[in-house]
Structure formats: C-alpha cells, structure tokens
Length: 86
Image (tube, rainbow, N blue to C red; front, side, top):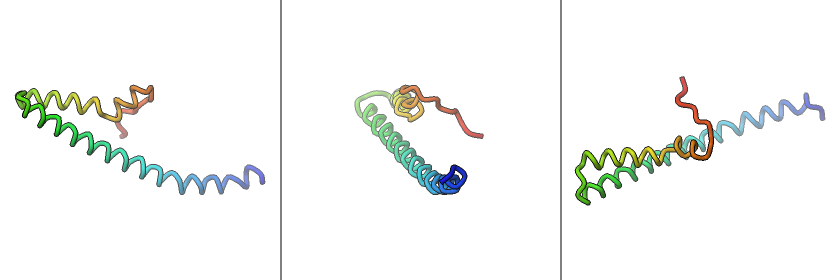
C-alpha cells in the first residue's frame, strides 16, 4: 500500500481515538479537581478544629489547594501549560 492509500485509514483511526481520549482526560481532570476541593475542605476543617482562626485556615487551605493543582504539577515536571483558551 502507498501512503495515499493509508491516509484514509490513519485519519479514520485518529477521528475515532481522539474524542474518546479527550473524554477520558477531561473526566480524570474533573475527578482530580473535585478530590482536591474535598481535601482542601477537610484541611480547613482540621485547622479550625485545631484552634486556628477560620480566616487564617481558609488562607492556608487556599495555598494548599493551589499546590495540589494540575497546572503546578505539570510545571514541576517541565511541561508548558497554556493559561486559558479563548
């Protein structure tokens, strides 16, 4: 087979694979984001129960939550991360 004959098969394979891959990556991202939010909430609650003022606990939890972000993780492994689309 020549490259010209393989092109439709390659394009069809890409057309089938990319949407499912995007769906899986998006779903994993949303699950990780929700888990990060729950973790920060429990962290705040634990700090307040430990005697830290709620305002300070929230600030610490926000910083903690920021450290758990996928963007920070990607930057730490050297990936280039776009800010926002559009």
